[in-house]
Length: 270
Image (cartoon, rainbow, N blue to C red; front, top):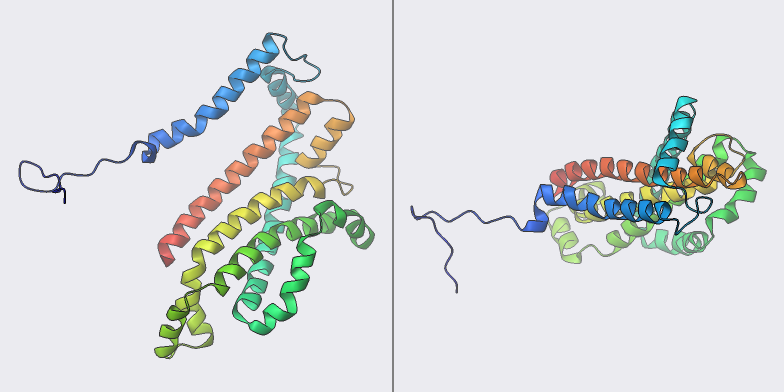
């Protein structure tokens, strides 16, 4: 067995952090590929490989964003889309956690609810649009419900599966100490599935942004998804690309906020 490296004073030498685990490398690496893509984009537009009506230059896309900012429209589109995603994500996640507990902890719940939820999950997002318009017209309710549906299933599927696969020995050990019902769930089962809850929430947030575009097709007059659709109808390729980049940035920022929350939760439970 290889002896541990020691310093001249006999104390163990501090282990070096692997290159790809260093903070500055993570930050720089995160910007590397986007910068390469941006450089390639600038090259193909400046050299004429791609005509401007198909792929505008980065400067043209920035100018399109600046135009909307000057008119005071861009921030309104962002604010309404973020509001819709946050509300739909919160409602969908809470309902997903509830049904995950029912199905994952109860055999009766699994028998009664699992089959129908599997069937509903297979329905494409756009298939809900006509029904939601019929039931809730084209108001905010229909949009938030669609985003709620999108956020529900990642949380439900991930957490329900994790609860069904909690180590039986841990559960039996908890029961041996007199834990039952809520106390058993809070003390044994919940800590065991916290990583799955975190993963489900992150997937749900990503799904909420995906469903946002479909939701803002429901007669919306504002929002990043509406801006994307309106730009397509008017042939504004610069605004289409701007909306796509904006959706990517918003998704990245909200995911970063959720990552910080996840670290706090994991530190508390693990």
